[in-house]
Each structure stands twice: as C-alpha cells, then as structure tokens.
Length: 119
Image 1 (cartoon, rainbow, N blue to C red):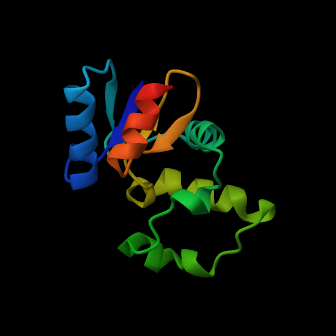
Image 2 (image 1 turned 135 degrees about the horizontal axis):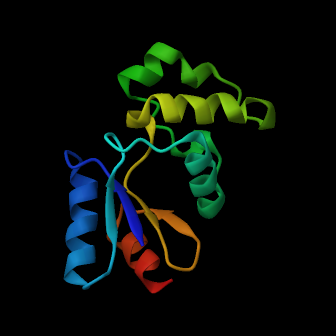
C-alpha cells in the first residue's frame, strides 16, 4: 500500500494517523517532492476508476492560471489534464491510497481510508 501525501494537508495527516492506528503496512510518497510521471498518473487513474479532472484541485492558483475550469472534460482532452497534473502536482487531489488489491481511493475521509485498508 502506498499513500500520496502533502504533509501540510490535514486530510493527509489524518489518513496517515488512521493507517498507523490500524497498524497498516504502507509507504509514504510525498508527491510534491517525488512527482508522479504521466504514466504513474494514468496508472493511478485506472486504479481509481476516475478521469484526471475528477482528481484535479481546481481552486489551486496553478489551476486558475492554467484555466483548467474551461478545459473540456472528454477523451480528447484527457492527456492535457494528465500533463498538467504531472507538471503541477499540487493540482492532484490528496491523499491517494493505492490498495493491495490493485485499486486505489482518494482518502479524504476516515471511511475511504478504512475502505482501502479492507481491500
């Protein structure tokens, strides 16, 4: 199990605290420092069953500068979104937990973190 975190994020800290309380075996990835490649982002999206716009933090300054709210949300625009996430990792929703069964969850709630633990 791996968790992508920003240590400054309270949701990330809560998720790590819950994983520790449950005795989970996991690896922390500080994704702002160890930036995921476009291929890694595609892989996580597949595991999540989501599209890149579903995990984009559209209120971030970089998102506003890029104008992502105006971007199309379709197959033809998918790679544009993925490239933006790789170039501006702060736009990636957090925390993301990759579960042992090959799936992943966005662990913004205790329930989502427990869901990842149960997989």
